[in-house]
Length: 356
Image (cartoon, rainbow, N blue to C red; front, side, top):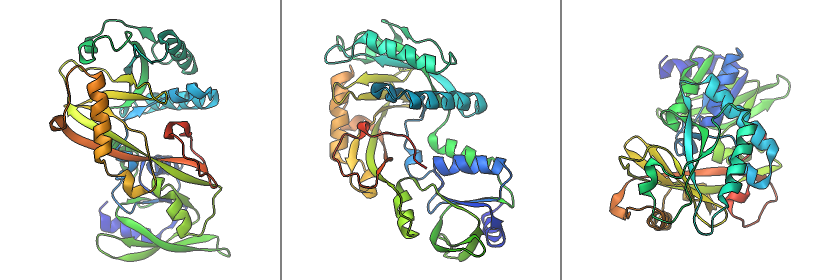
């Protein structure tokens, strides 16, 4: 269906749900609602997957981070979701080995980490490969001598292509007169008729300037980092809000012997950096930097690049300088906190869980 037909159907259809936001959350929910036979309109003020959803590390994980805080409920839930996605969407997601590299100095105990990976494997109900130690490996020459204590292999899920294509798969698998995705379509306002129990949303095609009104029984805010501003636009008070963490990757030329994603300990905040092969590049990062507004989160600045170059030169055998940077990958993570939250804390200490 062409764009003009989508716009025409949006004018004439009473939808069961309108989803605001065509990132990973909106696209996934759109997919599931369409499969249930509901009439669904998905709108995004920009292109689909144009925000945070195009800047992830492309890992489909089972919540390994939450073991650190003994949040076993989240690990169990995320591990089950990861394995279900690998099983149900094997054309998009595949299992992939990751290599954890314990630091020689100021790092975690290697066998304590291995024990954690065994527990992680148990939460996966034996669906993933058993974690193993591997002291000699193909990528060993990429890491500085005497900086690591062997390696630990464990299995996660990973996107086969890219995160943007992953989002588009969810959307383009449904397209009919009652399943309508429209990008470059902003929600300018709206009202709810208590008598009819119908929302009337004012939509604007940001490419042509054309405006129309869509009717729906339900509106679902899936706008990611813009969720709070959509709530404010509609006068909705929520018990939650978002704080933002910026993540930057450097795209470096991929060495010939870089085959598996590697996780290296930083020795600060219990944090790690990843070195992930992706096509002709190896992605090095990401950063974890609190930013006060969305605009700051979509620009990699000098400090971000300097930090990643410094860590790369501390960890990687081959020196890295600014001229070696092929690309920058920058995104912003919306982290859910209480409406009264005003602490200044490291982003990794804030939960990545969803709130509905």
